[in-house]
Image (cartoon, rainbow, N blue to C red):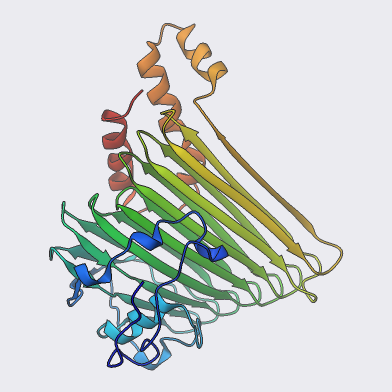
Length: 362
């Protein structure tokens, strides 16, 4: 991979893209990404349901001095960030929806969002990425600060075309007694990656991470998660569910890390996958790293075809096999969808699942 030119933005000069040999990029097709095929263009986003403005100087304060080359690209090539600030003791009743329509063939966009929620406040933010059948690169960065006793919902919906690369990063910090609910729904992209870091820094903080994804064709859908328990008596619960058809591939690697001071931690991590085709493939690698006692932690992963007993149950009641299999797949996602903040885009997510099922092998 050619290094960035000497006149590249700060922090990028002389750097190269990562390799699949690096642990956090293992199993990915990152070596196939050719940056020369893309030209930076402005991100055009539509904001509804509220305002997205605040102190742009906040951006970077959650991720910090990251050496992630894609975070540096976002900083160097991106425009003005969207900043959502909620004062203390304020409940924002209407969800803020930010829609990114990627329309430039050969374009590279670098959206950035910062959500700063004050003490005892609440908000729901939905971010949607969509495109037609174009070749493009999308590198979004999301930072979320949840102050004490706040309640924050964030949902990202990815409905990009089949030739788009998306390499995203989400990083949140959750203070004492605050609750952060993060949702992801991924259906498009040639290679669509989301790295999600959730730091539970305050005592009694909670982080819930959920995702649904459905890949077909030759798509690769990639999730890397980090549940970092720093404060005492913190809770995290991760549930990711995916369906794969044709030659599609999914990658999930997750780490629950419990720090020295995080006694009383409750942390759970589950990734489940259904393969509709013998040629589909799922990598699922959950991990635990525990540095203290008095904790409850578990992880689980499954990869397999449609459950034969569930199919037989429906068939025995007169449901045709193809219909039974589609009902099972649709119901497979319900456990996650019922817990995700989907008030504004729930029908769109369901429609994406239905579209995938219409073209599926079942």
